[in-house]
Length: 367
Image (cartoon, rainbow, N blue to C red; front, side, top):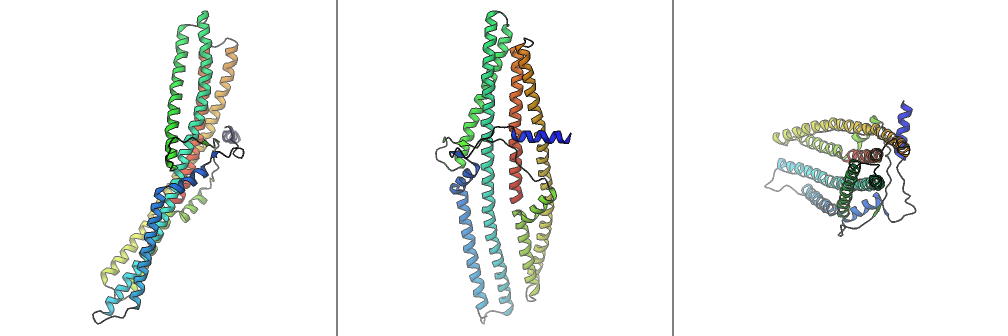
């Protein structure tokens, strides 16, 4: 049984038409689209300004800290007040360094979010294109069957009710097609806007490959990598490191007042608790998202089985139609079922792929 399911999954990964990119340089790939977004996105430019401001603030803070170390206490100062000033400047430098690191991480997170947004819209466009192809094919076949029923009606071998039902099917499929095409146009406009283009109606060719992505199902390895590399955890670890250093600075200097020492210790305790909580929540979120992907992976086998079943049912229906065992209306039902099975598979593969992309985004950013 396991081998059978595995075979179905492999079939689902390769059954959809493949597009050759090498022979068509005009195709806009996900990589090309991502590059275009990175070049034109205004939010990334704002992030660059934020980083520059943080760098300037760090430089100014470091300069002030150096001046304090070189100053001689004048007659109005005291050794204690000078020590406190040095502590405050040491802490200020650490905070300024942290703010710069946070700004850089913020840009990294913004870039990852943009990459994910490109993939979301790109995958949706491909899904719409392939769905429209399936519906158009079914619609054209249905028109042929309707014309046959009309001829039979004129010859008296079909009833008006049969023709009316067939006409209703044509109308319904025509409405579906209209809706899909309008949705495609709107999604195309959104994609052009995301790319930073002035003309939202620019047409482009996409890589229309429908294929399930590869995914590493080693949960322990995935969890350990996420705990080690994710930006959200790195932020918490950096906050804890700063709080630990601040606490150490205040405790080591006896002249520091009691209130500052107490605040530093409490900040350290708070940072430690938040870091531990963040690690536990991250592990929970990782498991949750992992099992979502695993569930969708199993569902790929189901939709492939449904497609194969619908295809066989259509073949049988064709034989029965040719031998007069069923009507055009019944054959149209079999064709419609096959169309829906193929569309369901397209949607499920794209859903699975998008879940993996979202997981990779979470893997990096924690969002």
